[in-house]
Amino acid sequence: MHDEDFMPELFSTFKLRAGYGIVGNQDGLGYGEFIRRDRYANVNVGDARQIDVPGVATQGSVNTGLKWEQTSQFSAGIDFGIFGDKLSGSLDYYAKNTTDLLLRANAAQPAVATQIFQNLDATVENKGWELSLNYSAIDKPDASLSFSGNVSHNTNLLKDFGGALDAGTINGQGLSLAYAQRLAGGYPLFSYHLREFNGFDATGQPIGDNQTFVGKSALPTWNMGFSINARYKAFDFATYFSGQFGQYIYNNTANAFFTAGSINNARNITRNVLTAGEAGSAEAAVSTRFLEKGDFLRMQNFTIGYNVPLKGQNFIRKLRFYANGQNLFLITSYTGLDPEVSSAPASFDLLNGLPTAGIDYAAYPRPRTFTIGLNATF
Image (cartoon, rainbow, N blue to C red; front, side, top):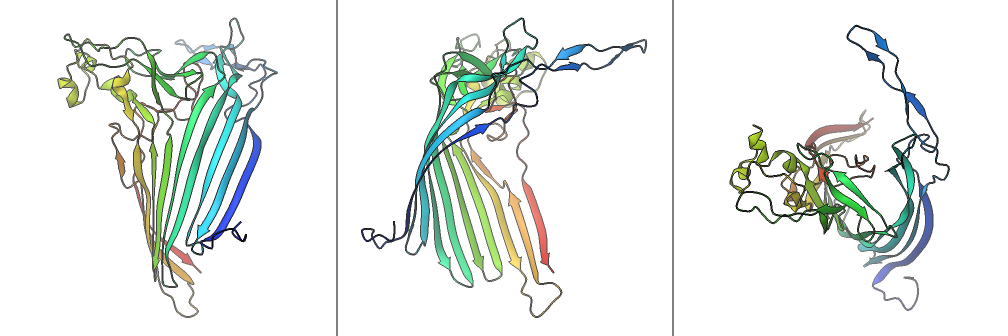
């Protein structure tokens, strides 16, 4: 549209986009989940060195109606550039609905398998917008400097689902079958379903009873990224930052290990537990006590390089030295090791076979990595 007479000369680029499509998804389904499959159990060798013949375990159940998930998406956007595209960017809006969600659910008993894959009779709605900007501050033969950034906002909602399924298994001593999340209509995926923690009473027992929705989810509502790229003669520089905001993390590690009950079991605790007012006999219940903001800003990558000037017809045409650092620093209020880790980010939950996210249980943090290197072109 920038070539039209009614457009201001300020715009060097102005384009409109719109699209609609439907895609299918079968990730995580595995092989043969819609048919009955039998598998021999492990061979057992007894104390007398006899070999016990293994039995047969059923691995799947007949489900001829099983089908792919289906996602329909509408999107509309604008691509723009001003001052000869010195400043350029795009603004997009999207709305997508996913139906026939695949999940492993408990089968009605008696059945040949305890859990089978089923299509959930519900709709997951995601909608939001994304803004991307790029500014070329300097663009000369010997030097360049550019800034790029993007920010997006997303809302998630489970619709048309009349049931409720517990998810987000919590691990630890005395926490068998405990859970922190619930799948229910009218709430986002990975919504926390917890007791409201209101401190300790005079005897050191936690105050808070029934679990309920607390209005928080493990899904971020805001995502952002920012990068800087620069070049001066033979030197080059690049860095990238990323951040997520609006999500909450359940600190299962603190729930399992850092409570006063651990003292009675002669286990290590953190120092703040000693002065929290909690009795050694207190129940380490699943509650908002261990729910924390997961907002963070991370310096994902930093690279500086030097291109060695080469003259004439040398055996080596190009030579570049570089140093790179990844995950150099993290700004967050989360008290765990890393808000971007999960004990089982893509696995199925133990309770109802649902995907889980935002549960931090003794997970390894992301490593900080330093690399020096040499690239040569012959």
